[in-house]
Image (cartoon, rainbow, N blue to C red; front, side, top):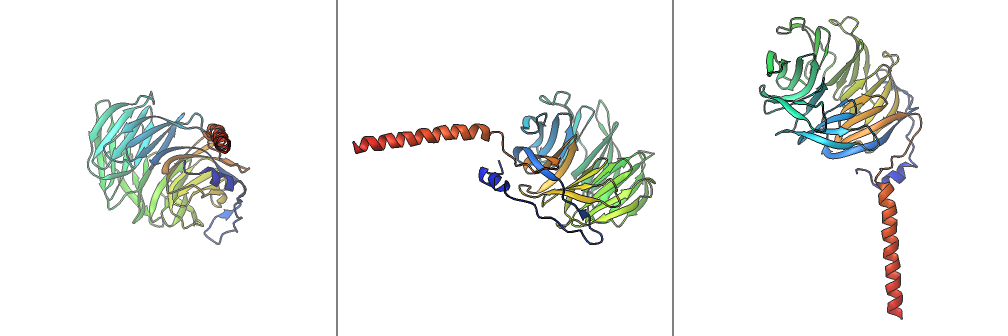
Length: 360
């Protein structure tokens, strides 16, 4: 585990410092809640995470780790999908796990039985480092770093390339109805009308959102994590002409690598930790919680019900937003401490007995 018992004990006495209200362009801060760590699953590193049902799918250097999170306090790796290279993007939809890696291979696995995943299709789709996979029906949208994006059609016989947009970069994308939002870290978010899926029409570029790293759309709002430049919140009431509601600078430098939102909350993962924002008024987000200790290189984030799942250096961490602070106590210590006490007590008893015998 990344946290030792000594560090966990120290956390009992540690209180987060209150943050002052930010200046114009920063979120208000009312750290009235806590992001409590409740569980973790270690496997060196986690790059991307997608949660579906009782399972979290996390990419790492070996492929996709499938984690049973039905008990979030004790997540358990039940199986894995091995790949020849490290994949940085994964998506789970309709009983299939979609993963691609930079050798040009796209692997789709049947995960109706997550404990025993079965390869459905392995296809060579062209070089490039995949950074985001979005699945809508049978269409698979993939952004590629330094390449652009591609659109595929997944059928029972294979993965057919429908369209390839070449660009200097591509860290993320999002799709809503007939619009595709493509994040180029050098130029911003480029909009395409995909009503004709085989021939997307370029609409415009949101040039204010530079350094795009991740994107998430919930209802009629789009959240853009900008590496080194904070977060942008857009209204999609007019999908072809998004309006900027708020440009938000984080207090720790704004290296937003993962963003995900629901109706009232926005979660952001970066190299420094994880923040939670109240977005009931998206034009005026309020930071309500932050956790930094033990968060090392948070690469991606997902949410499901009451829990937050973070892919990071070390594997997978599970957090819970609460209005009270709790200390994380690894489940195995409930066994290690009593056993250790018995072993230590036995050792002391033997030492004393031998010492007394020597004196006699």
